[in-house]
Length: 77
Picture (cartoon, rainbow, N blue to C red):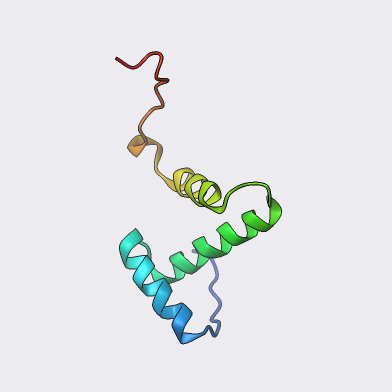
């Protein structure tokens, strides 16, 4: 199990994380970690849209057996 560290955050940010965590089926800590990863990746890749970064990170976390294979439109019928 990874080590944990307690931190203090603004109550408003906590409430936003709590609401988003419920909608995204994450823990509050998991939501804040996700935001931190998105923010860090956005700073490292300023030419990419934040929505693309967030969706990419979410898809990478998805279990492979739950993923839908990509089918190009030219092959889809």
